[in-house]
Image (cartoon, rainbow, N blue to C red):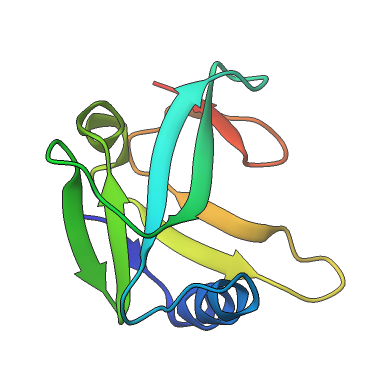
Length: 109
């Protein structure tokens, strides 16, 4: 399960509307890919369709889809949003990450 904070929900819904997506009908695809200064990096994008192998979650009114491989790295993660002058944008609070980079966009297990 992946959770979505209230601030992340508001920002995702706003960005989805700006890009022609609907938070009620479409998905936020969350994934993990090789790269970044710590070895693995997060991938976040909007999607209108899911495939059979995707895991589907809904939290706080946001529908999330995660591929099987990425799901193993993301179990228990909370997606948050930090705005303002010193904000970092979207932040993944991942209990599985043993090490993260300074920007918080990549991690290792």
